[in-house]
Amino acid sequence: MTLSRDTIYLAGAWTAPSSAETIPVENPATEEILGHVPAGTAADVDRAVAAARAAFTGWAETPMAERGAVLGKLHEALAARAGDIARTVGLELGTPLKVAKAVQAGLPLAVLRGYADLAAQPAREETIGNSLVVHEPVGVVGAITPWNYPLHQVVAKVAAALAAGCTVVLKPSELTPLVAYLLVDAADEAGLPPGVLNLVPGTGPVVGAAIAGHPDVDMVSFTGSTATGRAITHAAADRIARVALELGGKSANVILADADLAKAVKVGVGNAFLNSGQTCTAWTRMLVHRSHYDAAVELAATAAAAYTTGDPFDEGTRLGPLVSAAQRDRVRGFIARADARRVAGDAPVPDKGYFVAPTVFADVHPDSELAQEEVFGPVLSIIRFEDDDHAVEIANNSKYGLAGGVWGTPERALAVARRLRTGAVDVNGGSFNPLAPFGGYKQSGIGRELGPYGLAEFQQTKAIQR
Ligand code: NAD
Figure 1 (tube, rainbow, N blue to C red):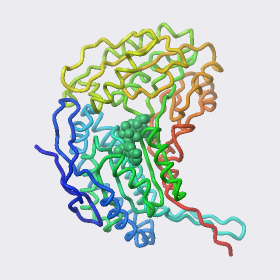
Figure 2 (cartoon, rainbow, N blue to C red):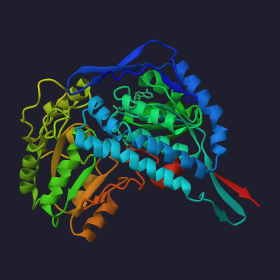
Figure 3 (tube, rainbow, N blue to C red):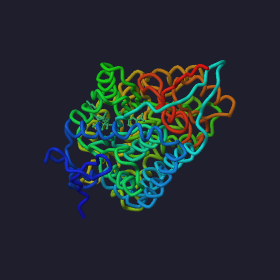
């Protein structure tokens, strides 16, 4: 089976790209080439932006409820592809099939459904004195996404932008472009008006940079590394274009003295290792009160040993490969340089494929590289603290501020959660809410995605005085 695609999507039609150059897509579990996609060019971006601009006024003036109905059809067409989505992400990213079904396919479907429903509600308007305050779409949006949740990150932008009345030029990650094609297939089938959604695959420095610097792109919505977010912000600054950034994280899971230790460690390890640790919100620092510390280290090491690596399509596999050889080598570099006590990490991994054994370090210094830098692999760092103030100090000792967890009696845990300088905190394992605002403090980003806050990101605010 070849998964190759040879067209880009412009103005509602699958179209030949301007260059014959292609990008190979690799299966990181087998190191085999799954297929190829076009290597888009700046000329392709020009054509896509022109199509999005031409479609903008009509789509912006379409009543929001009608836009919601189109998103409902898109949801239906995408839901019919749920099996293909899970399989495709299993192949191009290596997510174990069970997780791929639940998260890589299930989450974007829930987010899309949420935006279809939100668009069906009356438009948000308010009166302040003699002013009527209305919200209007920002314009043409460039959406640039990474590989770790390759459909969710696309849908979080595209669904919100389309609901708001924006039109979109999408560039998925060159490592995992295939699942984005499934979304555009669904959009084509659902009858999205031509030009409302356009797809230009390609590399960051070529297609991504062309989108970020394009004079007719009104907003760039980006998810990825902090370094790239910085480059995109510089490019957009020249024309004062709006930028929304979802960047990296180094989130803390704080286990207080009165926590349910077994549950806190089990859920914490699972969170850190989800998607082989390639999760921006991963709780990669486990902060443990001294009274629980030794027990927590032992529990975490035992839990890590149960994360069997292997073929993502095997029922028994809990940990797939990392996305690429470069990512594996980067993670192994962090492990090799770590100045801490390694208590898990020797489990065998398959010879072929970009696997890293689930790894746990204890006695990690809060200022060390391991505690400060985003590893983006299955590596957990355990740090001891003395009291609640000390825990808050260590948790906030980070350039990032994306997510976190706190475990303890509800009131005390909530008090600590309020003190964490981070965009989201789960208290005692509170579950992920796809309608809640998602985004970072500090270098984890600017702006919020998901639910009504995510919609507002793609809107301008106008005051009409009467
Ligand atoms: P990356 O920054 O290398 O790439 C992300 C996207 O940006 C890709 O589509 C890439 O082609 C593009 N890109 C690269 N250089 C560019 C440039 N100069 N101009 C424009 N676009 C460019 O990140 P990645 O390696 O794909 O993803 C991993 C990183 O993303 C991690 O640091 C992770 O924490 C972060 N991330 C954050 C979130 C979040 O929601 N906060 C979600 C997922 C990933």
